[in-house]
Image 1 (cartoon, rainbow, N blue to C red):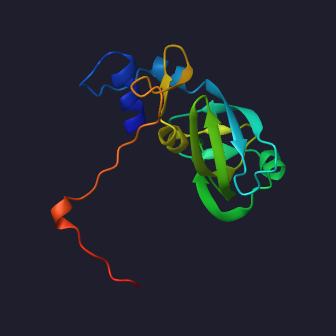
Image 2 (cartoon, rainbow, N blue to C red):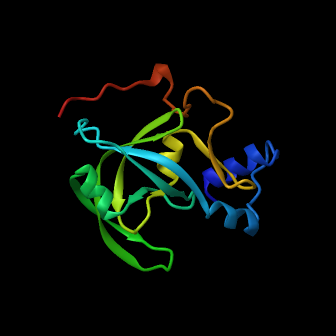
Length: 168
């Protein structure tokens, strides 16, 4: 079970301190969750942003966009990525970016896989914007533990054990 799914279970079903598996019903509900997000090319700020109805899928990793959004936002291909699809097959797809994402009072930046016919909001951009999915209501929302500003976890080494790196 992924961290995001366990986290949702803990936060929204009141099972603080436990990491129980989601039921198949909760899993099915989460797979059908949508969110209205705004996408923009931060390199070309003169272009209009695009608002899309994205499938929010915590079982997926990346932001995925259809080719017409890549064209509309003039996003440059940075690389290609081999992705594994739900049926187990693999496919080579363009990876574009950067792309700015906005949802309610949250903002994030990501690369995007160009594939499919609907935008898909995966776990990485949701974590970046500190968004959570409520399985019972199929709603994407800002994390109620930090409603005003996105929060994140960043771990660092002990302050006394820092090693200086040599320039290359």
